[in-house]
Image (spheres, rainbow, N blue to C red):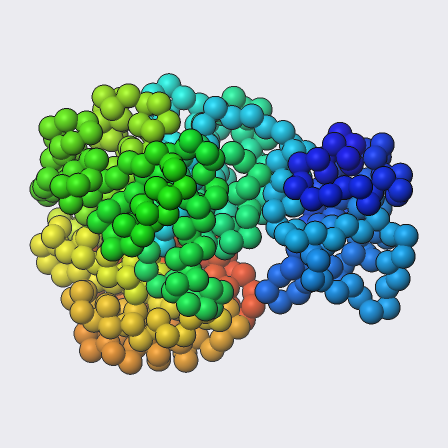
Amino acid sequence: MNVLELLGRIDEPIADFLYMNLGEKQVAGITADSRLVEKGFIFVGVPGSKVDGAQYVPKALAQGAILAIISDHSKLPHDFDPSGKPIFRLEDPHLALASLAGAFYDVSLEKVAAVTGTNGKTSIASFLRQIWASGGKCAANIGTIGIEGPSGSSYGGLTTPDPVGLMQSVSALAAEGVTHLALEASSHGLDQKRLDCLPVDVGAFTNLTRDHLDYHRTFENYRAAKSQIFSRLVREGGTAVINLDDENGPYFLDVAKKRGLNCLTVGHDKSADLVIQSIAIDGLHQQVSLSGLWGEVLCKVPLVGEFQVSNVLVAGLMAYASGIEASVVLGAIPLLKGACGRMELVGHAGADSAIYIDYSHTPDSLEVALKALRPFVKGRLIVVFGAGGDRDTGKRPMMGQVANDFADYSIVTDDNPRSEDPALIRAAVMEPVSNGVEVGGRQDAINYGVDMMKPGDILLVAGKGHERGQIIAGEVHPFSDHEAVARALAESGKGEMI
């Protein structure tokens, strides 16, 4: 594909390129990373929170880029002369990067769905993939835990990858035969238009709580970023699925209605399209009575926590909106498996005991996780957790307070200290904790938790979930909560992993 064919996908005037004789040049690749530029590439210098990509234009051109795209407001290096150079300025480089990536890879899928919210995105995307598969569709999901598809799973690092990386993954999945794709839409990803490389047929909103205020500054900005899933991302004529049990549900419903999207809602409120009448505990499962859109039905959810019922039903409605019959959805739900590190039952340490790993790393998500487990506890509810460094410091004592209020015993340890002193982070978390202990070193803390378990106890290891590394002093050290729990069980001789 030549330059002008690709540029036709950008809603910007392209006449300026005609005199540069770029029209017939073939594009070898697209990137926003100057380190990856090769001969024939288009380089998009997106403005970042710390560094403007325009600063790397000279490097990109020197490495063979045939075109550089930067923001109208960007400043090039003061010692660089742009005269006669193939540099295109436009209003939104983020959107340009997504549009170019989508055009360059040009992958066609039958259905694309995206879910946003503070918590539950990973689980819902995984559940949707599983329901699609039950309906005979070749499906995959991409997000925080990486890629889950027909050939297995691979670990990833970003909830919403950059458009080029995303389209490379989508192209590989399409080559495997994938026709249905579920995506997680983070607030960063929506704000930076990382998903605009694909047409989205179905969007969903789960919940909204305090998170990422280091980036968005205010909760209102955070909510506005999330709402872009309905205000512009989901295609015209697409469907919005909304959890009305969250207090922000009506706000997102209003955004979707103003856009003219088809709307499907779920919740305990009788106005919902799919009404949750009741939830009953059945061992480590839940029996859910539903009414409304799918009739009067009883549905078995093989997971713990009322929030997982919500996640499952949001995924079910997304599948339904994409053309899967209600009977297929209801038949698939009892067979669902929890996503990696998302309220995942990983082992037992004696009779009537259980060990769960969960990604809950905010005060609200930790509270939700602890409340979810409480009805299943016959002995004590023990939690191992910490707080990340170089992030919102205000949530540290809030995390400690939540653990103090909703767990029987708290073990405060390290999460990802990053560049901060781990002891200072632990001290901030520990300040309101009166029911536990501080244990430096995450493996030691998990050992402590497993060692103290008695019959009937449940241990929650919270904060890192699926992650396979721990960032300490700016370096990533190999670490997995799953492996740490396995070591602790082996050393204690109390039980085994599932």
